Length: 400
Image (cartoon, rainbow, N blue to C red; front, top):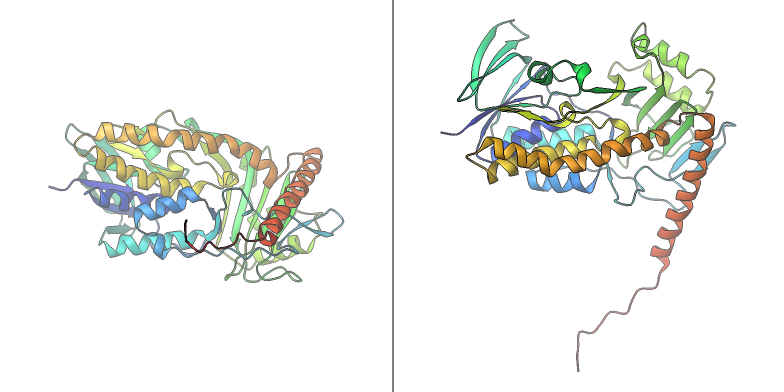
């Protein structure tokens, strides 16, 4: 008899885990609190580890990437305090060469596999209670449509339901035990059109002390944007109108990019507005309950590794279950031991990356600008050298 797993959450982590489970011979059932599958989403940099995980999950052929072509005269622009634009290094110009995608691009590729394999998906459904027994785990589920509650038995519960995970709260304890404070906020959404006077695929950054606006350009899609700022009073940020809150925070930054982004925000209802945290846990599993993705380790948006780690986590979970088909504890221990060094490394790096996204002071702003100027010159010099270097003569293949 095939083992059954309840996967809570239909995001990148949840679908990756479901595909991994399916490939390991399990029968996954996905429940999702939303009434339907979400599409679209903001800019994501997909790193090589994420692409390899997509290969392992069998979805890479359906994954659409949107990386703009590099241009010698610049495709990413930083705005100075005087409003002057200057070339800046692209977010994608990192040594390991991530690809630009929308969150929805990854989810669409995963959904194609989930739907194609006939995985059962129940929308508007959430777990209310989780009770472990000797031979399985009983979950009390609730339908948001009818309010009906029913109990169902599984061999494993996978919590992939985000930073404020219901599964983590039920099985491991309150959010406050695991969410670290970063004293920062983000707002991300899709723009309908590019900032005026910039090319369609350009990226634009206006970063000041404690607040910044980013516009991420794509090769074949309208840009997405990120507003982020630092604050010591997180609770206060959730009071009143989100739009008016952001207009107040970014008042005084009278640049074309800020004006365009704030005006665009007033014309959309589909945006993410939230506080920034990381999830730190001593262990990601307890008997027959395991957490993946943001529910387990949320490296946050500054790390740039959220989607990559979610893909890798789901693929690695499936691989561990295949290697230990008759010992769930051994499988989960091996999965965590293999994955945790990668997660820890990028969680630590996120603090430094935060300074690149939103400098903490005027001094940090100046240092950030100087560092990025140097990085751009080094990167552009290397690219130019690669494109102008003489090619080695082609061998005829004969030998003496």
